[in-house]
Length: 236
Length: 309
Image (cartoon, rainbow over all chains, first blue to last red; front, side, top):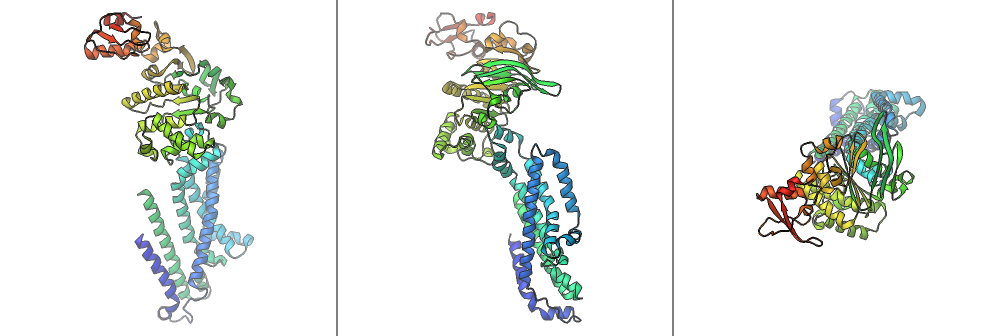
């Protein structure tokens, strides 16, 4: 926990400092005339990056959870292999390809990025939710039915609460995947921490590329660190 | 109270329950006895419609359960299962309150009911109310399971091998507790077990199932009278049949008038099996029986016991 907080503070400090480190970027890239990335500001990029990640995770959670509930109902059990195949296929498509393929339909901006991230993050949510719901002990379900609970009530009051720890683990994985992958959205013009990378590549400015890459990678590492912390706390 | 009329349940070609007709009188403990796969649980689960019959019908209080709303029906019938099935994320009090909550009782009424029930099943309310199921021993958990089944005061209890997973001492304690609760509440209880001793310890009525068919039914004493035949003989065990028969007969039925001074004393409601055990453990060929209403007391003799039919 302490290591994570320290890392976050350091990350924030670096974002504050980056625009003032002109001499450093100059020294590293003497041939670049404007080596300092200053607009839009780093915190604005970070904010939009996180909004995209969170939004995508939220949609992925709804889809994944919905599919998992459907696949674990007696009536939907036959759909299970199909749902699993569809969600696996969705994740197998690399986000950058998903963005490229959806560009003609969705145009530039946040929309194709969101779609690519949802496709990428829905599988862990569904897999974990199916696992969690499957693990609810049969006698508990038998008792719930035997005491006269309806199936909606059993789902809401017994199955989901008991499956929650496993579902939460899946949600964390989905969120980390989304945060680490969002930078790709910059190729479709979505504003995020990948924006300086794409802009830098387009303008032959390796200094911007480096700065964007540092913050993108750093944020992904922080997300991973937080994930480990969350999972570790659960299993321990 | 419960009537099975020509009830069958088929899974493909296999008949789990095969044309069973059985009546469970109000206020009795009826034990369904059989080996695993005999269809006893399946038969019981038709009463609260956890299993639907393929043929025949089940009547509770004269009404065909097929016409009842399943959830409403189940809220009116207590249900206890072997692995207890307590909701692991709910405290003891919340588990017991399951059905009263479904029925929309006031919180104050529910809290009072929980206290009463914990006391009835022999658990200190202040000590156990706020525990989670994983903080209970097997016997305590099953007592909570019993309290949950009794919560809304249903006239009928279904119990599916409720004590089978418990160790012998705990199991006997719960059997005694169940008989006391039955005497106190007058519930009709349909009890499934594969354990012959448990069946004889509890049953007013005994129904023996074998391969889905009802092969014998009636009062335990009548059922074991004479040489029981076929599957009944096998289920009760060839060698120990005579011993089990002793468990169905009251000790006082063989009492003689006589001087009981200094003899080991039996409880007034002891069975001949208990008498035999006491004779063996006390090395005494005679025992004393205390006087009780309608019975003047007396002595029980070894020779009478071994020649009893």
